[in-house]
Amino acid sequence: MQPYPQMYDYLARARARLFDWVRALTPEQYAREFPYGLRTIHATLVHTASAEWIYGRRLRGQPAAVADSPYTAEKVKTFAELEAQWRGLADESRAALAAVEDWDAPVEYRMTPPNAPAVRIRTTRAGVASQMILHEVHHRSQVMSMLRQHGIAAQNLDFSALMFDRQPEAS
Image (cartoon, rainbow, N blue to C red; front, side, top):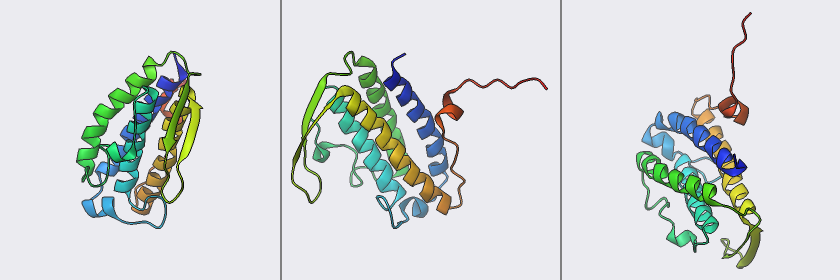
């Protein structure tokens, strides 16, 4: 099995569990502002989906601009909308990862960070895939912290807990 599609399968399982916790929130809790990260669970999740959309396009050699993303807080207003749209995105992302034959193939793109000059990025498909996966883990941790402040014990999304085969031993 190729490692990046397997890692994406893990992300999808962890995301499903995270979404179970988020689904239990009221709209007010979902939109509550925190003094870190992207400030709300909504903004953080929408940003994460947008980044996945962008990195998936870069894996396929397609142009990808933040302005073109279908995942913005203005376009995706509720968690239900985001969850439904991310299902299709997940299928696309998994397919893009599975289609890669040369992980060392170069990828180059121009990026303009907020309040900073444009930069030229040079990496490989493996670099793009790694960023896609690790970026979600980073922001998932922020959402888990926000959930804990709502009294939800968001925990145990460890790779081994979700992906390793576990068999109880007889006593």
